[in-house]
Length: 612
Image 1: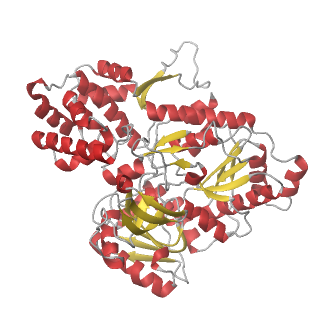
Image 2: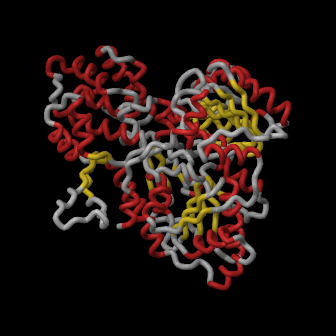
Image 3: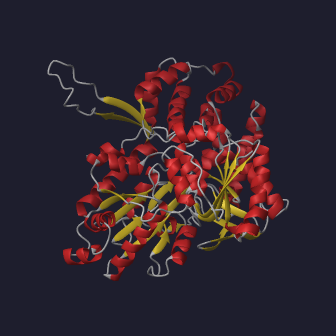
């Protein structure tokens, strides 16, 4: 079986600020409901005595597991592992617990800060951090012996030391010059090891991936295809790992055509989507696709609902010992794959299988650490095929293409494919978004409210997903939230993976009882137990990290805040199939972000590791 701790950045972004230092640390062992309640009570008492908000107790119990209160008394800086806790808050807690014995040079503090710094870097997408940067940050936090703190963290096994030879620059080589020193970096074991596993998987698939069809069959499939599609088919059928680049429509259409043609010739092939909803939509839009050939990745990996699994983790039955029964897997929307889920995916691919990963150019990076597609391209070990747009496209394609190119040119939309709704501020933006969902779009375009997805581009504030959901619930399904904050009829989204559904999967609450919430997902109705209900959020409005796995007939993109970027805007706009309303509350900040703000660089090792 494969295990992935997916208390990932999608969930962290909603439960903790981006500076959260412990969002990516490993979750604690699971406890049953009674033990969790007792632990929460013990933590509440400890926190109240130390002047820490009691509201932190449930998060601490979930993160630290059994015996959390006793372990925090022994080492109060373990509080840094809880989402949302910052170093100064952990120092305050330590002084309350230890009194005068709490000192800046305490080895426990230095060790915890190393893990916290690396976890904070992981939230920003990095899998590794230069040792020099960690040492400098420790000095700023008044750690007396930063190198000793690093050594202590390494001894605990949660942090790995990584040494890599610098790339050789032949043009700049001078026989008399000193050779550059090896690059020393640190990484959380969780991400460093999964990055190595992903690289080994790609190497294995590249080495074992023979031609799936003979030359005559490949030639027959290529007949009449444009050159780029012909290259895409050839690479996918003859190479273990391939990357495709193109628009969402072109990637999907090419994936469907390849899988259909390959399956007709006896190849076990599937189009794999981020969510079950995406797979159901794909199958409905392409009735010629073989039955069962469109499948959500989460379902394909066969998640196990077993007791004892750590909170926020999912245990998958598919893996090295039980690989997929497939010869060809095509993921037309793989841009959202972080390195951990990618490692699980490639481990479950059998020797000889072919894996095709597609992504739109300039898409937003994954919510979790890593940049898989970009690293594969940088490694120059796999074919990369650019799919040209087959037709000029409509206003939606035109707008999204303009954003990818750094512009916001107005587009002609005679059938209201694109509507720009300027507002004077975030409060008005929420009001206009609700109006669009509940009245304007259903009335003018005959798209029901259930097919409209609001996407919030502000991570926090008056126009973030939380505020929008509050307003939308009041209009669409008012109620007191009697079942853990939810009512029957509420639209919900999975914010951290469950055995029952993947991150980003939306559903509707159909009932509730002692066993939990009954939620109708695209893959079927599932009962989410009370202990896991915290992994759900209201789903009328979604942050981009949760929305990106499923396209919708109509999207209302609420543009606000200062965290805008070109990749985020392009990805949000590209989620709309028929109609896009842009509720503009960012003023000139939107055009500036599209023009100037690309995706921040991520420090990763996958490209080098794949090279071997």
